[in-house]
View 1 (cartoon, rainbow, N blue to C red):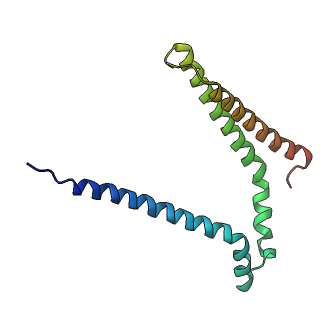
View 2 (view 1 turned 90 degrees about the horizontal axis):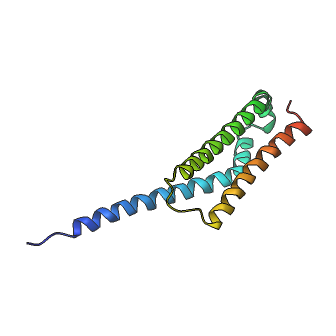
View 3 (view 1 turned 90 degrees about the vertical axis):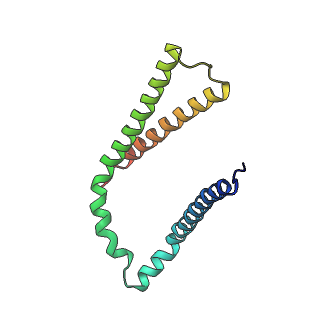
Length: 132
């Protein structure tokens, strides 16, 4: 009896081709996104839509800015606190077989400090100059 190994390799390549296509499409979308900061305003001005017509949208969105940023920061901190609590509870119950390495500990504290610094900068921004 012989087995056909060609059908297996073709299915692997098909999955690889899909991944390559998705990555290529993502790269193209990222390139267009980066180019839109320069090309999109030029294209809009050629259509007769200037930046002055977008001021109304800015005023309308500014009233929701403070609440949304505060909500986003609160949700991020709650998620971090929940994950740290689960990790602590797992270690306390003995379900974690290995102790964290030094790199994991340093990375954990660095990420916690980064989140705290980001929230502090958001709070400082609103304290110095509150939104409209």
